[in-house]
Image (tube, rainbow, N blue to C red):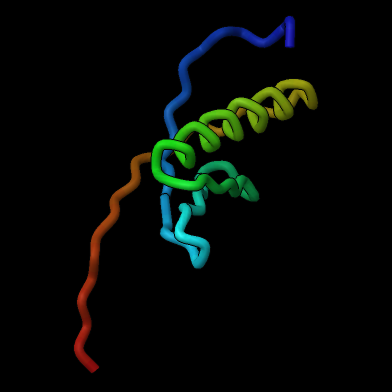
Length: 80
């Protein structure tokens, strides 16, 4: 961790209500990163911690830290 340069990173997180009444969080820019929380506040805290761990791991492996590209989210309605 000592060679890790302090920098602010921002990522889009998706919070989905799960079958246990909590929230499952995924970060599309960070493949494989999935975490959960009891409620939205807990899920947000867990996601922030998971992102930190993910980025520190990449840094330790001397891999590039992904930067998020512009994203858009739309709710689409279709009739069949």
